Image (cartoon, rainbow, N blue to C red; front, side, top):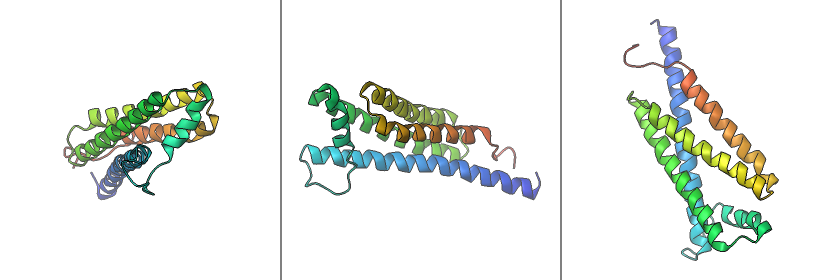
Length: 162
């Protein structure tokens, strides 16, 4: 492989790694701010400023059908679990990708679970007539779909090609 092609494949490798690390960080921060939001709501903290506000937004969305509080907390806790799981999966996928191990099961699982979260949000927004949130979740779903295509579709170096 010539130097120009080698440089290009290294650049693509780091772009892919950057996507994986970005999603690991983004989901970790989303999970953490939602955890703080939950802690504030159940009075475990003294109203920390570092919170998402998503619990209150979800409560307003669910109010249309007078949904019980336990359902609100069940949905919100499920979201936190999925975001935390996605953060861990993207972190492991980043590490596996970075050391040239076979990362594809980790990558596919991370993207699959996190994209399922956005798809679930979109279905719930239809059920609860919460159209104001749909555009954001559609954009996040499209971003992840595009990132998955980039990670899978573009070439990158492996130890065998160097």
